[in-house]
Length: 478
Ligand code: GLU
Figure 1 (cartoon, rainbow, N blue to C red):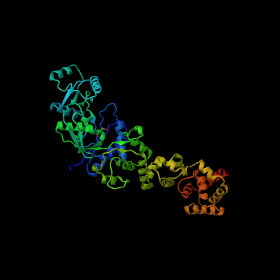
Figure 2: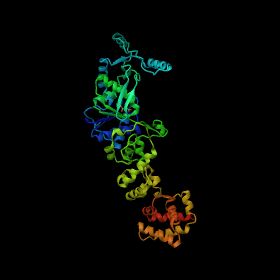
Figure 3: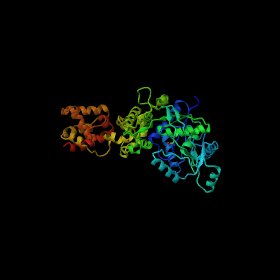
Figure 4: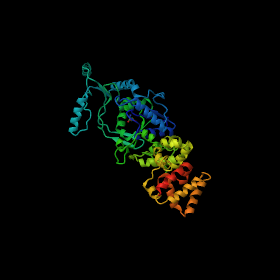
């Protein structure tokens, strides 16, 4: 196989969303698996909606996900420029070539005229396609229209009556009956290319070998293949990856609360967890394993395992995948990223080492770092607020709490063995065991009825804090 060259071609009209990131990831995995090149091309020909800020944010999110590229804007490369607005002269040249070959024609129909015609076709129950008005204008008619200053676009002339087929790597042969698309604009009257034209030309000139993109682009692929044929350019191979649906089985969108990659990053999901989850949206490994490192994904990724049915975006599953990564990576891997998610009072109250221990203890089931304040609630500094259950547990335990307080005050040493010893001794002295012993103590020092290992909480909170909390609880235990 010749060197694999794939691309991700975002339009800088918004933040990188789940669908775009999945497309970028599949391309990146394919390139890295095959030792090929991953290219970024910015499709910014929609002047109104594109912005440099969005471009920067897309690149930043790709970097954060770890999807590095070999050629692209800023990075450069041998097939640039990599921003479509910087390639306008190239599109003009190829549009001219198509006109010369008789495969495209100047079109002077105005938007209003086209809309009226489309309306009447719809009314007759026909698909609203270009009716061919400017297909065979003679030279004189064209000159006259130009003299009259009528805006001119270039339209591709679709050969009529030909059924077509695309050999798709992911879904096999895809057939298109003749008449599915009418003559389409390739160069607008403002001189800018349409998406289909620019993408086709760029993929050819950038020597893209495989175009991997969402199934919603299938009918665009049909148009792009026609352009290659008309220009005698080699066509890349295509792999259309399944749509991503929300839980209600409609195309995933903002309505589903489908966040941008940036939102997940801000919530503190590890990038490799997101990458792991996104890889399984429309693709599967040979084995059963669901938690894979990026290296393992690269090793395993092949297009023949791309599914052809839509996949459902399931945030609960993402949370599960993420929690597995966080647990496996532990504080060694994640504390550095996680610590900023501790509320300010935690960061003031605890040392770096203590925070790291709190992170370790609280990350058993942590799916994103923004949940740390909840998972680490047992360590909350300052005055304790007892939840209802904790308040109920404390009722009538004054003697026990006083016993704990006195013994902790006099503890010889503050380590797990001594803390355990004190709890046991207090219980023995009062003839209390098990839950009756631990639950009031937990309620007293955390205000909660559930939480991580109590001995560790007491150890990290320290003697002073524990004695204070027990004094405070004496009142509540009354
Ligand atoms: N700019 C297009 C998009 O964002 C690219 C589609 C393609 O990959 O060709 O949908």
